[in-house]
Length: 347
Ligand SMILES: [Zn+2]
Ligand SMILES: [Zn+2]
Image 1: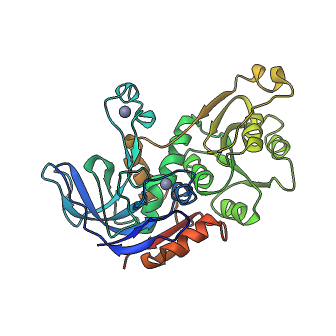
Image 2: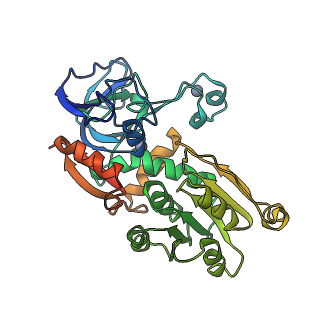
Image 3: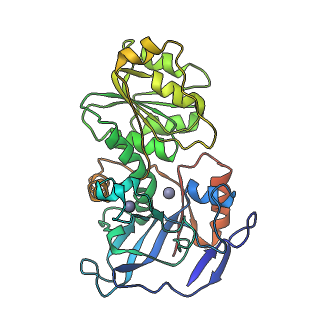
């Protein structure tokens, strides 16, 4: 099979023939139809998330079942599928407490060293990481479900959204944009979106945000207050990952507000209150962080996409043939045109 191999830091991936992965008893081999580039892949390419090289990256894939292991009953060759690449150990303290998203030994197939990812014609995963993909969902949109939508939706679950809530989302990139779509599956939600790039704000507007706030031009905390009768939003979702937006998100919620922090900054973050009593203590604000997703969230999420309660039609910024993967990586790395998702297709 052809695979894009990460051989050397600072060099393009090399497309080469390599042997197909061999499935074990409870594994499924996917014939990859679409595979997307994630920011996690870019961290590895930049050396921020070091990998043992050579390595085949990619963890956001959808396609067809090519082969099933002898122990797999619920899938057969030819089934349309998507994969969620997070493998948990089922043995550790957190797994035993039904907190698999916090597994101490969790591994992302394709993103962690010693695993083989989906920048290839074939890709294997444990059967429990594979989900049936309804006909209504195209393969390129399915790649969005596997990782950015799954992570964003997990954060939305943590936010404890109630009917009629105003939800402010900081950052309209892959996580923030999809968190907004996830939040809007609740009834009567007013979504406000903060970003500094007009193009991303326009996309959020088209997808249903009732108000967009460009933080270059106005103070987002003041804008959120203005749009909520001075109270603040019920929920703030932070998906930028900067010192400023983490602090702004916390200051944007009303009393009994919930803040979910999903951005992943590398730098030190300090949370500061000019008036701790007024701005935090007397408000009973809940602050949570959110990372990755849970298996039991996947099928409900796939149904939300199938029934168009979550519309992923604007999520794919660019599709390229697999052979152009290095061009795709450059686009994501340099944020050319602010893509939500760049997807590689196998014809
Ligand atoms: Zn991802
Ligand atoms: Zn575990």
